[in-house]
Image (tube, rainbow, N blue to C red; front, side):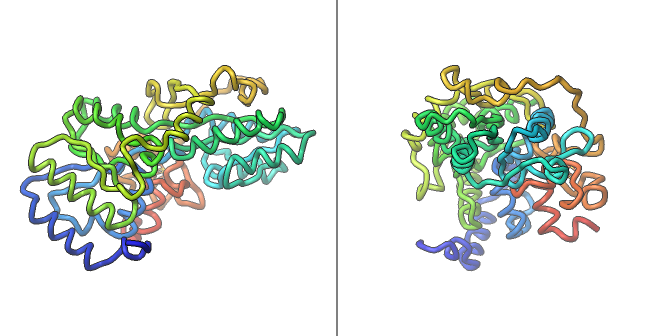
Length: 365
Ligand code: SF4
């Protein structure tokens, strides 16, 4: 197939739905890890096409959603400084910090906050504004990390000394392990995130599949990708096998992108990381290597320790772990909307609450 429409072909989708129904003999619970997959599932109603015995659980794969409130507060404090140009992806501007403040409100009060599409844009801004301090809010899973690493690498090579990172990068597989090791875990199969595996490959999933005795299917984002991934996963569940399979072979190889991996390892090291609504997950985040610590915004700017607070109504932790669905939150569509979000999953383009709000009109009634 050459064109994206071909991955949305209704006739082929129908064939997959029938094939899934034919092989399903028992109830199964499958988690799609990535927020991009959740949006496709909700947008195209894939969960509603499946046999009732198959439940899709939405996972924590939305990096904007899991960025802890403490880091949002730090971003707000940094962006409020007169000497700073704060660069960020657009999604982050409306994520609420403590006291419902967000970066958008800092911008409205005169903060120099710029939406960029790549950290490399922030390096360019640094080059053009040598009298200002440029901070890039580095958010994202493994998919976006190589570009951040490249920005740091490039800034160093160019001798740019006014470019810094506020690092909020997170790693997918420790999040998967947290879910699988929970005593309340009900996930029986995983659709792993295709885009992440484009960089990382899927070598590391073999260990997880064997340790937790669970099938993992690396899956893409188009409707037919997801249906095929579900078919492969159900087939394994019915056969009681626990292999790692690759549905997204047009983009993902076993080893992944080694050049990108090398660059990431040069610039970043793993670190323990708080996930918003979930808590501390060991080795689930990244920090700058000592040799690049001069680019760390938190080293450059000393911030006062503040107390963090979040909306008591927001159950994003339960949503992100797949324990509850967005419309089961009492604030959904009432006190929490994309215009006035209480939590990040209602803001992010990969957030489950945003997907339900946008595509599941009935759920708001
Ligand atoms: S609907 Fe809003 S308040 Fe409820 S979990 Fe989602 S983001 Fe939080």
